[in-house]
Length: 326
Image 1: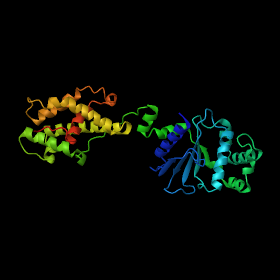
Image 2 (image 1 turned 30 degrees about the vertical axis):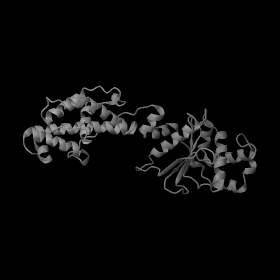
Image 3 (image 1 turned 180 degrees about the horizontal axis):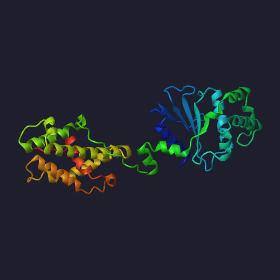
Image 4 (image 1 turned 45 degrees about the vertical axis):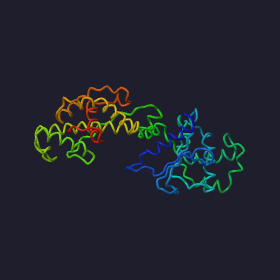
């Protein structure tokens, strides 16, 4: 990972970072590079850039844990930009490094007044990291540093950055190749939703044809065997709905659509067999045929559950690609 990738990782993590009470940053932008003003990532709590209403993330992609020397030269840049009013004072100044903050810097950061004094002393004495820069430490800059709350300069630990980044399952998989676990499939609500309208109407036709009597949704749900069979089909639909959500988060919805295409190719010959005379026969031929399909070419194959492929038949009906009743 290069420094730019590290900053992008931090940016994505900030977009997903929970701030408590369901809140998140309203604006996050990676600014690393020339002219960033010492801001690798700017994360705002409110739409406008206001004092104390944003956090500054400083990414240092070093091969060692951060030392005071590493940080002092960045803080010198930061305070100069604060004085120049390049941006207002942030709520927190986060140090983000793959190997974290080293012991010397950690100990210094636990004592904010000593941290402040050490920065000023090293800057004035032109110690390592600040050589030849004592003339930059003007009275105005010193006064600003003395008024700054050094408790707001904190470490953002790598494990937290990774945890927040992993909340974007697609980005995490793309960057690290780590496939998130598939969550529980949604349960079918007690009453069909508008999202289910097309395949539910097709199922009503199936049961009406089978019983030889026109049927409404209310009558179907109140009936015995037909009602139980109908709810089982809805469960299959929601199994596939869970797979669709998993696919959308990790690979994009196009992978689920590609799987639907494979299922359609596999079950169409069975459903269109002239030996099948009723919608119920076609429904059962389609769902049982889908269950037996091998869809190894799909990236979703390793995550399939028993109800997924039969459930995709109802998704195909919902898209107008299949019909049970002629």
